Length: 150
Image 1 (cartoon, rainbow, N blue to C red):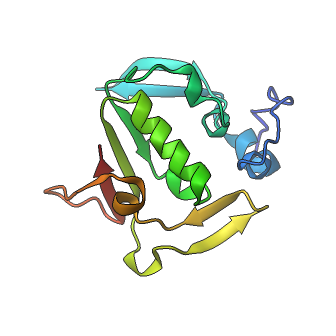
Image 2 (image 1 turned 90 degrees about the horizontal axis):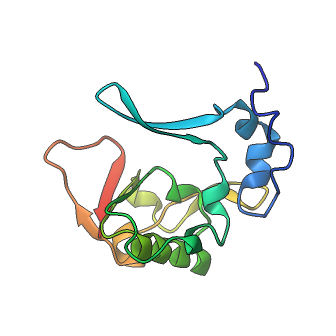
């Protein structure tokens, strides 16, 4: 496998999962992130996958700056606790509305199943109750996924 992220030797290890990514995953990720719609690329930005996990990343955005914030199977990897509560609060602050899709496992709520270097984990949270989000049940279920919004 090619090391297509060799262009990021300066990626700092900040105790937020970056060490895990630096051990191999980050260097195998594509260097660009693209948002597409109907087979057209709408946005293409340089990818530094863990930037959003840095504590001050969201602070640079104004209240309600985005019409919609969407996360998919992302927050399960952020360690539970006050830092995660603040993180979700920041997402709600910068987005007028938000949609969060996270893996579901009602029998695992409140558990941490796996951790890597103490920073990257599978943390099964009660998304609606713990983060003041509203549960949504789509007409067509999304397998293995809880849907919550604000």
